[in-house]
Structures are given as structure tokens and as C-alpha cells.
Image (cartoon, rainbow, N blue to C red):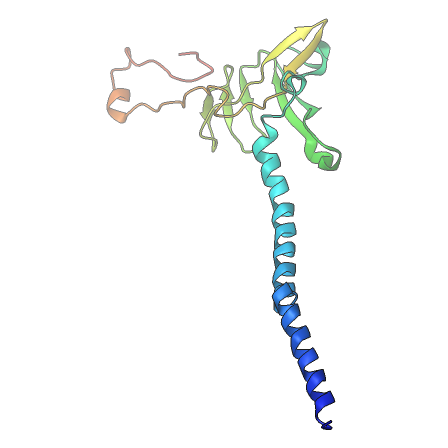
Length: 193
């Protein structure tokens, strides 16, 4: 026997073992590739959950959520000729929404003109824009009075898509306005002209 034979057998065993591992797909490269695929899959699933929830959220709403009538208070709380602020809790809030789930709304009970304290807009009795920065009229909640209590429909918030807003106030051209004094008619909310 040659003294190099045991080393040759060990080398063959090592080469055979390495070949067997490579054929089985257990190389470091294959392991890291599979690990990166698994991690990317987990990250993709975590990111997909809110997106899928958003897309399917409207389809999975219960009929009770869409038909939410909220009581704002008794009619004595909203005297005629005045505008009062009422705050209600959005029926579709979750525990972590906190104060953002509280929705303010102004209740106008036969008031002739409403001046918005938020943006300085002025609105007529019917909700049409009179003046100011806002470019559209007010949204109106569907409402009813039940047993002396004012109720609003808060299942779907009023938006441009869900409610037809009143048209913008049109300004007359200078040529049309400069008519004789006896045929000119005032055009303002207080005159109802």
C-alpha cells in the first residue's frame, strides 16, 4: 500500500459528498436564494393585506353599517333661526381612530345665511355658495325627526359623488348690470331678488 492511498480515498469521499449535496440542492447559494424568496413572500403578504382590505372593504360592509341613523339631539338643542355645531361619532370607526372618528356638522334650522368659521365661506339658506373661498355649496346629510330628536343618515358621508351640490353663484357681466335704474333688479340673498 502506498501512503497516499488513504488521502486519495478521503479526497474521493469529500468530492462525492460535495457532489451529492450540490445535486440535492443544498448549496449555500440555493439556501440563500430560497431564504430570500421566503422573506420576500412574507413582506409581500404583509403589504398586500391592507390593499386587499381596502379593495374588498366596500364589498364586505354589512347592511347595518350602510343604514346608520345617528341621533344628534332633541329639536330644542337647535332653535329656529340659528346654526349650531353638532358632533357625532362616525359609525365606521375603529378603536384606534381616536378623536378623528368624531365628525362635526352644522345644523341650520331655517337660518337665512350661514358663515362658515372654518374657511370664511358664506352660504344661502338652501346651501348654495354665496361668497368666499369655497367653490361649491354645502353638502347636506339626509335627515329626519323621530320622537322630537333630529337624526342624520351617517352610513355614507355626503360627497360630490353621492350628493348633487347646488350650483355656483353666477356674477353678471358688466354689460348686463349697467341697465337703467328702473329695470335693474338687486341680486343678493338678503333681498331674495
